[in-house]
Length: 74
Image (tube, rainbow, N blue to C red):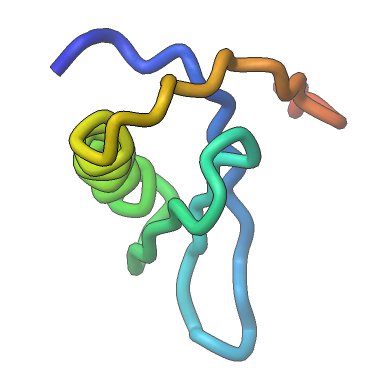
């Protein structure tokens, strides 16, 4: 898989009791994990599948445009 250039946001979901990952530039592309690391790993697979399906439909791949709204500091 090529390096992911799309923003991935990860957040805790009380409703799902786990972490959700989304890619704002890729409509409907999301993943779930018991940990944030697992959600990101699953998201890498989801992004790859999303991009492949999008290309197979003959659509132009979206350009990465989303920027983080807030960054964590250590």
